[in-house]
Image 1 (tube, rainbow, N blue to C red):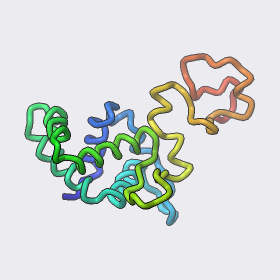
Image 2: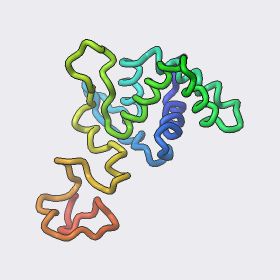
Image 3: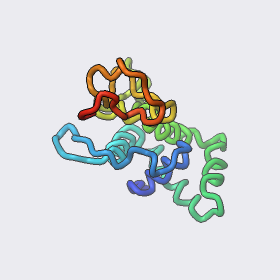
Image 4: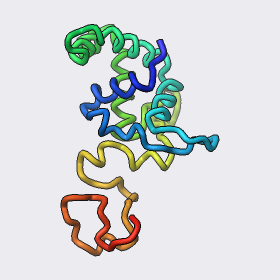
Length: 164
C-alpha cells in the first residue's frame, strides 16, 4: 500500500513527537531535475526509493491503526512485535529523516552508511529548532551576526538589521 503525503505527515508527526505544524513539510525545495517540491514530498520520495516494502507495510499498519481509539498506541503495539523488524526500520528512518535529514543506506554492502539529502535540507532538520540552535556551518543571519549578543528569544533575528 502506497502512503499518501497527508498520511506520511500525520505518521511522521506521531513517530517524531513533533506536531505536523512544526514539521518543515511545506518548505519548498528545488529537486535535481529543477522542479519545485515540498520537503515532505521529497522526504517521502527518498524513503519510498530506499525502503519501499517497509514503508508500504508501515503505511498499511498506520491505516489499520486509524480505526483504534488511540492510533499511535495501536501502532506502538504493532512496532513492538518481534516480527515487526521491517516496520521498526521504516519508522526509524522516518524519524531520522525529519530530525537529521539523513537515512540509513539500505544496502548493507555499501561503504557509505548514511544517505543525506541535498544542502538545502540540512538546515531544516527539526533537531536544530528543538535544541534552539542553527545547523553547524549554516546561519540565516547576515555576516557578522556573531559580534552581537543574541537576544535569547528569536534565534533567527538579525541584531545587525537588514536581510537575514
